[in-house]
Amino acid sequence: MEGGPRHVYLPPVTLVCVGLYGSASTWLYNACRRVLACDSRELRIASFFSDRPLSEDGGTPGAPSPFATPGWDAAVVKMHEGSAEALELINSEGVQVLITIRDPRDCLISVMDRFGWRFETALDRIEASLRLVDRVLQVPGALILRYEEGFMREVGTLQRIARCLARDLDEETSSRLFAELTPARIDGLTRDYSANDETLGTNPAGRLFHRISHWHQGHCGDGAIGKWRYSLRPAQEALVRARIWREITRLGYAGHGR
Amino acid sequence: MPGTTHVATMCSSSSYEAMRPIRPLKRGLRILGGRARHAARGLERRIRRRLLNRNRGARESRALHLLAGDGTPPQTALTAEQIDSFQREGCLWPFTLCAPETMVEIREYLRAVTLQYDCAVEGFPNTKWRHLDDPVVYRLCAHPAIVERVGALLGPDVLLWQSNLFDKPPGASEIPWHQDRLFLEVEGGTNVSAWIAIDDVDEHNACVEVIKGSHRSVVPPADPSARRGKSDRAFGRMADPRLVDASRAVPVRLRAGQFMLFHEFLLHRSAQNASHRQRLGLAVRFTTPQTRVTHQLDAYHTLLVRGRDRAGINRMGLPPAPSSEPGS
Image 1 (cartoon, helix red, strand yellow):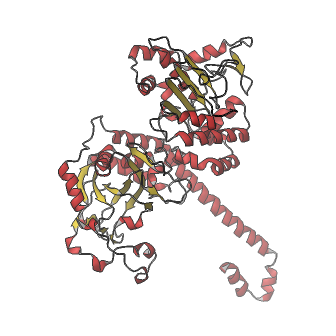
Image 2 (cartoon, chains in turn purple, orange; image 1 turned 180 degrees about the vertical axis):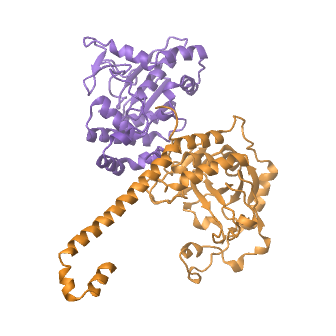
Image 3 (cartoon, helix red, strand yellow; image 1 turned 30 degrees about the vertical axis):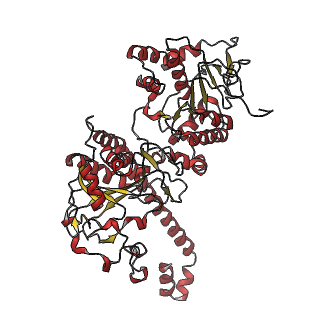
C-alpha cells in the first residue's frame, strides 16, 4: 500500500487455510466456514480465496477485504501461493493456520487433470505453493492435515477444526455439516451452476466456480494416491526431482518414490 | 579386454588375419552381451522391487498397527529417582516399547522391507536416517514410550534428528569404546540417545556395553594415525583405550522391544558378535530445538516430536507419510 504503513483490522477469529494445489484445501476452507457459521451468535464472517488477502477484495468483486474495514467477527482465507502480505497475516498474533498437504507429485497430476495446466505451468505453481507451505509449516499451533490420511472423509476433522477455534461441535452438528461436504453434494451443487450467475467465475480450465465457496465444476477428482507413478514421464520425474525433491522429503514423501 | 588379448596372442598372424571379419561381430556380441547382462540385472532389480512393493503396503500397515498398540497409553513417566540416576550414571534401562512378540513382526518388516532399500534421502545407505523415509522406523523412533521419557530428561521440546539401524550379524566386528558426541553433527545442546533392541541382545550377540558415570568427562580420542583400515577414519575418534577402565563395563541386556536411554558422553562399545544370532538395534538421537543440527544435505530436515520449536534454527519437516493409508 502506498502512503505509509497499512492499517489492518484483524477480525477476532481469523483462519488461514494454506494448501498445496489439489490437496483438498477447498474442502478444508469450506469446512472452516461451516464450523464458524454454527456459532449461535450471528457472526459477520468474511471468507474468500486470495494470495494477497490484505489488499485484495473479499472474493466477490467490489466486496471490501475484511482486513481493510472494521466490524467483521471472523475471516476465513484460503491461499495456495501466498505473498509478503499473506505471511504478514499468517504471522499475526491470534491467527489460526490450517495446512493441507499431499504428495506434491500427485498434486501436479491433479492440477494438470483438473485445471488443464501444462506440466511446466503445473510444476511452477506447485513449487510456489510448496514455498508457502515450507514457510508456514513451523507456525506454532498450525493444524496440518495430510490428504493421504483422508481427512476430508472423516467427520472428526470438523471436530478438530472446532477444537482449534476453542469451540465444541456435537456429533449431530458435525454429521450435518459433514453431509454438506461430501463429493456427491458438491457435484450436485456444481452441476447446477449457471453461466449467468454473478456469484460465479471461470477458472483456468474454463470451468465455473463459486466466488465464495470456490467449488468448481469437476472439483472432486479421483483422489487416487500415487497416481504420479503412472502419469509422469521419466523426464518429467527427473525435473520434479531436480526442482522440488527437498520439499517432497520435508513433507514426508521421500519414501513413496519406489 | 583380457579376452581380446588372449585371442590375439594365441593366433598366428595368418589366422589372426582370417579372423578380422569376425572381430566386429565378436565385439558386437560382447557389447550385446554386456547390454544383455545389464538389462537382465535391471529386470531382476525391477522384479525384486515389484515383489517387495507388492507386500510392502500390507506389511507396513501391519507394523504400524502393531506399534499403535491397543489404545492403552504406554508407560512413559520417569520417576525422580530415575532422573537422578540418569544424571549420575548417564544411562537408564530397561524400558519397554513393545512386547517381544510384537517386535518379532516389526523385525520381519525391517528386514524384508526397510533394509532392502537405501534411504530415499540421497547420500544415506539402507541403515541410516530411515526415520525420514520409512514410517515404521519413524514410529519406532517417535514412540511415546521413548519420547515422553526423553522429554523428562531434555525438557518439553524434543527434536528427533538422527537414527541408525545397527545390523550386527554373526561375526561382525567390534565397535570400540567411544562417546557419541564426538561423532554428532550438532552445535550446542545436549543429546540423549535411545537404543532399541530389535533382537534380544546380551553378551553373546554383542549387546551394547556401557561404563556408568563416564559421561561426566570427555575421554580424548585415539590418535587417528595409530590405526589403519577402512573404517579407521571413524575409529580415530574412538576413545583412547588406555584411558578407558574396561573393567567397569556393564552389558546392557535387553529383550526385543526394550530400550535404553543414554547420554551423549557415555562411554559405550559393542564386542564382535561371536554368536550365531543376529543383532539388530535402532539408535535414535534426540536433542532440543535450540541445538543447531549442522548436517549439510539439502534434503535433510529435523522432526519435532514433542513440544514446540521456539528457536526456529533448524529446518523442520513432517514424518514420513505411510504409503498404505486409506485415501485412494
